[in-house]
Image 1 (cartoon, one colour):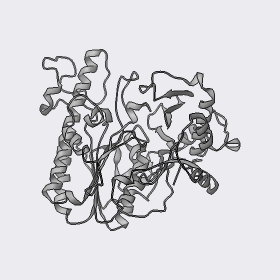
Image 2 (cartoon, rainbow, N blue to C red):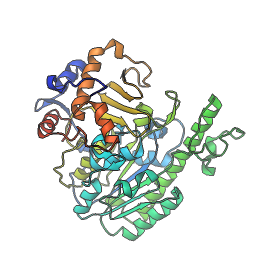
Image 3 (spheres, helix red, strand yellow):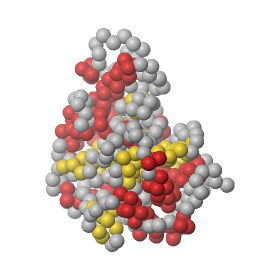
Image 4 (cartoon, rainbow, N blue to C red):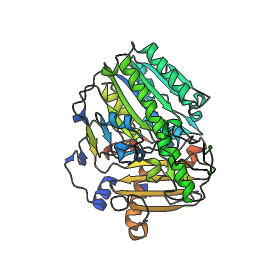
Length: 454
């Protein structure tokens, strides 16, 4: 028996139609859907001669970087890189935690479809597709959540989980791998724990710290901590900014290695993160919600043969990484995914789905459709919220009581995408059970016709 909202699937109006009516979007129509151009104009037609390197930093919120508008000089190297690349200004993670986020990035599917019982249950990964196309594949990380036993090594010829959690050691190993393998065509992923907690005092970043600080966060926050006052909050953010500055220096080391090895001219580089971080924006810290500060991430793609650099406000979710990267190098795939190929036209009202399903006591969804942001709390108790991101980017003013019809329709859309009651689907996935999101052929066709999946 459902203890959440009742199912409405039998009486669905076409979700694209209802959202168009609610949000009033206006653009060119293709095949009955309102479409907008993808980002193909920035890149050459997909060719197989390029390496692909994904560099990611844990808990790096996008607005902590200069290229995303931050006023402190935390990211000079990333900013310089971004100036000759394509920057996605509206980039989101599909989840607020590391394993669920990368489960989506590597499969192109939402976490509740592929991350069950804390395991990645899909072997048709991005790395596996590159490997099948003849690429040497490598994945190096020092985040213990991404263990081989959970399925994250699938498709990688070389996979290393560094137990020390030492980014310096991970960098040495990554540079060495590039040195030893740069004459082969490769797909690589290097994921560094910084700027994730504990935020450490970095000697290289003293310009970000108050010199006479004597509080309890003098040298580190430790992994778990609480903030009791504004002084502590400022110190914690200063330490985080120092970690971002440190991460920026790590990124530069990789870029310099590509240059030294002479492969910078044939390597596509992606700079991204798994999720952001909260600093009391909504009364909490770290990353346990679906608010913007937690699920907005940097997404920057550099191609050696870029037609032009630039910026795009095209919404990106990391479920889009799968098909977009394969398309960039001309690898075909017939896999049906929640993510889309962003080189092609994209439905204007395509929902961006976010999940929070790894906390013991919380189960949450977020969904963005143009300027509307919908929150669905399944646990600890059922609740819904609605925000207008155009006028309320900080998600401070819940307008759900003023727009119950919008709320109902957005729930129905989420229900359609999930393949059942969203809360029950998520709970079953957490428990490792076979869930309703194993969609029938009829459901798949419906979602494809609405532009929700490809």
